[in-house]
Length: 113
Image 1 (cartoon, rainbow, N blue to C red):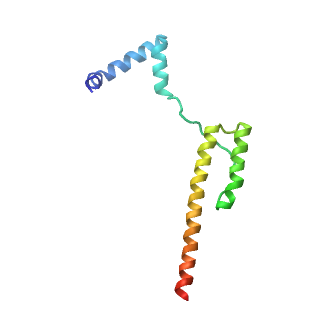
Image 2 (cartoon, rainbow, N blue to C red; image 1 turned 180 degrees about the horizontal axis):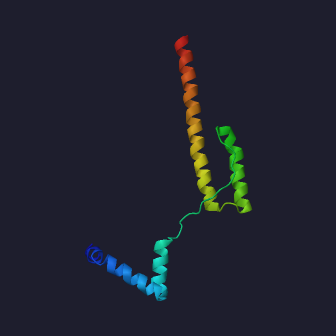
Image 3 (cartoon, helix red, strand yellow; image 1 turned 45 degrees about the horizontal axis):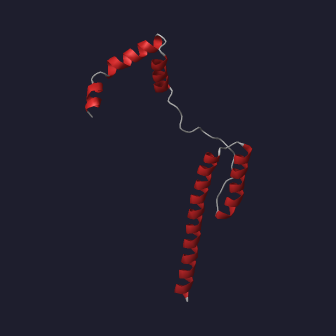
């Protein structure tokens, strides 16, 4: 916290110095400035064609396509894992919705009798 307070008052001066050193070719200052302008991406945008998934039944085909994309190198294993996790969440939602509809139908049948 004390270091932050000390640096806070010097931010403009230190930034200008780093820029000046970078312009003179100092590799460390240059790297620092470039990393501020273009921060390293943590993830890359990925565009792949996946089938629409509107039910739990459609998830098997979609999952196969993700696995095929991983095998073909269109997706990294970790990227595929993210998509598959989203599919697992969708499956849970589909199943919950289906169970809710079935319970309502059963309750409605019991009330009508």
